[in-house]
Length: 496
Image (cartoon, rainbow, N blue to C red; front, side, top):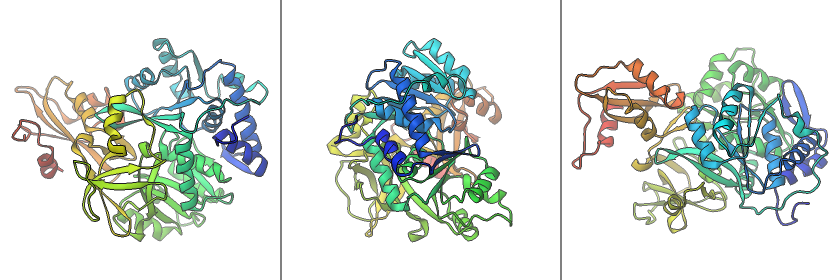
């Protein structure tokens, strides 16, 4: 059995199967899955995986839209002290291949839409010994009796790896432990008042940290997860009414789509909290049409999710109040603490900070220097403990488009592969739909020609579609600094 000193998600599932029994844990495809059934299926999957002779610490990858299987897998790997690699299925094949090469998982699960790609990965990556397609050939893993003997692990053992684009233009796997995620979820349970009466509409992808937090956090609290494969505005509105949804997460342009599809007859009065990032006008419009409150937030995959959150109108313009388990300091370029109301880099310390980037010891030394996680973000803390996000450090500049992280250097690298391009600078600009859009300022080589449409299509063939520029502008010569490097500050000021 599990150690009396450690708590893992398998233990949490077991506890709730006794406490909540036949209450609904997951609603999926118009059917309710009870807490007893969730634990039973998780236990059977854990036994099935143990029959594959996986060793503690081995990785299991998943490439799928949302599905109850995610929650079975979270519990099963907790029981066996394995590690799950959550892959963004919107990445292109080369990027997904890089993640497999980086983490060398033994097993890969995929949905039917990604089955061909998953099977191709097996043929090109010797580490992959097993490939299972959800709802197709995973039944055999559930045929064994429930697991009775779990494998002991430590609270800080790798549990989840999520690759982020926030480091030097290269996908880096942020390693999170069960302790990281359990404590992060407990903060949300406390802040949002999650309990057995609450229902979460699970529209955020479960390959993103906030989807993981809200989904597992709701289960920890004994509430109900209403799951959908992917976001659909009209379906979401119907489910909010039918299932009496109390909480959902939303990044641009989710609320805009919901507002566009709302009808006068719709009753969204059950909603209490919508948490995410949105512009002021959309928030005001949303709150005027529903009884819910919009909570703004700040966090990273590297901080196990949210470390600041509060009702947006409590301090408009802020990213929320610093959470209970996060110690945040604002520092200058020499890691000296700055006084309140002074912008600087956001540094974080505490049990929510991740275990490091997978297989990158030198990068981890830099990231964790002097005992703090250096986020690469610029912010300011006011006298009442509200964080104001200001910008990103140039070396970690990141574009946040529709809830996805896009690193300019990665887009620039792809654009520069076009024979007509001499120089390029990629940066974020305001976008009415996605909050922040991707713009490329380009200087062509002498005598070369290419249209905006051709360049956008070319870029999308090399990297994930959501990373390709939406806006392209040509210029004879890109501004440069005295040392000959591209002057990003001047470009953003002039061409945003």
